Image (spheres, rainbow, N blue to C red):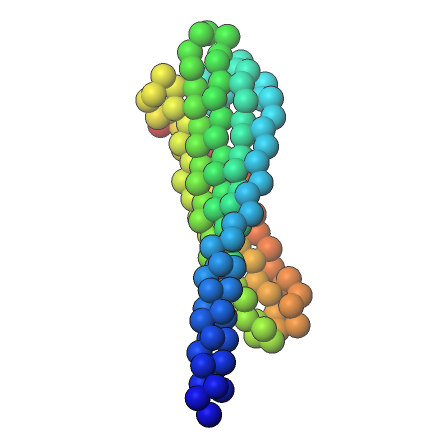
Amino acid sequence: MKKSGVLLATMAILLLIASSTTAQMKTVYTGSYDYVDYMVCTDDLVTGTESYIVSVWNNKYQFRYEGTYVGESGKEYSWRLVQNWNWKTYKGKAYTETNTAISIIKCEGVPIAMAKTTYHISVNAQGEVTVEFDNGTGEWICL
């Protein structure tokens, strides 16, 4: 009896260690690309780099996007967006997920434009996506 109690306690400790190790494992994806276009609200032709970092752990996601640019005018621009998702999984049940974020463009450190982005998904009990909406390009509003 004492032996089985020690074995159960050992298994519980090992399970706890395995669970906490798995819970802390994180996968990170990164990338960057060149950007050339006219900057919103200024019509300044800019060149620069946009980059992203996507971190995934358990059912959580964090998306970080940013860009730095220099216009033909010599002005410096920056852009940043951070979205945190806590993806819910309901086996055999329908669910929805909606995430929003605000993105700001700055010129020389001063905000000049903003956009609200929304991502929505609905999944039925069979796991099929029934509604998906992503306005990730959001309409920019000049400030």
